[in-house]
Structure formats: C-alpha cells, structure tokens
Length: 282
Image (tube, rainbow, N blue to C red; front, side, top):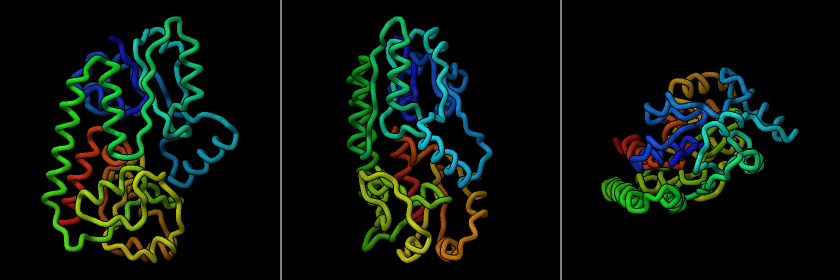
C-alpha cells in the first residue's frame, strides 16, 4: 500500500500505527518522526517562512480574499508516486491543502486513490480520525490499540493533576493578531487540571483584543503559536509592544512548541496534555 499524507498530523498517525514504511510522499511541513524528513515533498508553501506573525496573517487574509491557495501541490509528483491512499484534511483551507485543491489533485490521477479526510475538532474526533486512517490502511486492530494507549495516558494525566481549584489558563495560538486556541486545546487544559479562560472546547480558534485577554486575568499564559517552535515563539513575543499585551505577558508566561504539540490533531496531543500538566503544577 502506497500512502501520501497531506497533513503533518496524518503522517504522525501513520507512523504511530507502525506503517511509516508505506508513506511515499508527505508535505513540506512533515518533520516527525525524523525518518519522514527524507520522503518526497509533494507540497510547498508560497509564504516566506521568515515573515513575522503579523505579515503572515495579512498574507493569509489576502490569499483568502483572492481565493488563492498558500500551499502549492506538485500534482505531477503525486501522480508519479501512484498513491493507493491520500490522507487530507477539512479543517483549514488557508494554510493547508483544502478540499477544492484535493478534488483537483484526485481528478488528475490515472488511478483514483482512497481519500481519507480528517476533520477533528475535539479529542474524541481525533480518535475517530485515527480509526479512519487505520481502517483505510487495514490496520484496525493497531488503531484500536494505539487509541487505547493514548486514552490511558490521558486518564493518568487527569488522575494525577492537582486540582482545588486548578489555575486559570490562557493559551495563545497566534500573537499578531492574538488568537485564543480552540478545538481540542481547552480539553487538554481541563485534563491537565486547569481552567481554560479563553477557549471553548470544539470551537475554532478566535481572535480577541489584547485588552479583552488582559481582562481575563489568567494565572498562566501559555504561548504556543501554530506552526512555531519555542524559539520562534519567544522571538514573536519580544516583538509585541501593545500596552495591554505587555500587561498580560508580564504575568506568568510559559512556552510550548505549538507546531509539534498543540496544532496537530495526532498522537502528540497526549504529550501536550502531559506537558501542560507539568507547566501548571510543576
């Protein structure tokens, strides 16, 4: 079976199922596990990776307004790789391969692959997507075993996290403009023993003003920008000059690798829950 992943989280799911050897193509963002870095890259970003948060946001907004994709797919390469399965997503049409792009890719192929579309917004839905990938790859038992192991680890985090009451936590997914993390992140905070004061479980990430965010008075601010590692996140925080933002960021601030742990709906969300518990409770 030959598999192309159009989503870093999907790449991680396939590898966690023990089927990394079936991957024949991945995206330019796929970097985990390390062995996938040598695989053919079937996408590339049209955005300069050195742009600041604000510049990236403006470029994405312009692309959305114009109906232009910011991710380019090498359709010829996809055809040469002859995939039996393509794993894609239906969460973000702006910064990843969207459904319209995907339809164009599939229609261009001589043989039609099985398309698996991931669409998770909650932890339960992440597990459902993992099972979908397992079924497509004829690895149902392996998927069930993986999900059971991840669920067990989450129960352990919940059981050991100190409460009474837990800290009030705000997770920032972007800084210019400020976005509050949504989807599965509020669930991770709750499992880790905290109270998410900004996000709503299962709801999209939303932008709010620095004044609104400062008024929430969180005990802990976790900076975990989508697509950025900790070093890049620290640099972005240093660029923020808004007075209300500085009042908020002068509180207790911790950093988490948003690119690796909170923005990818895959197995490492459980790692994120464990890390958040340590950040909250030491």
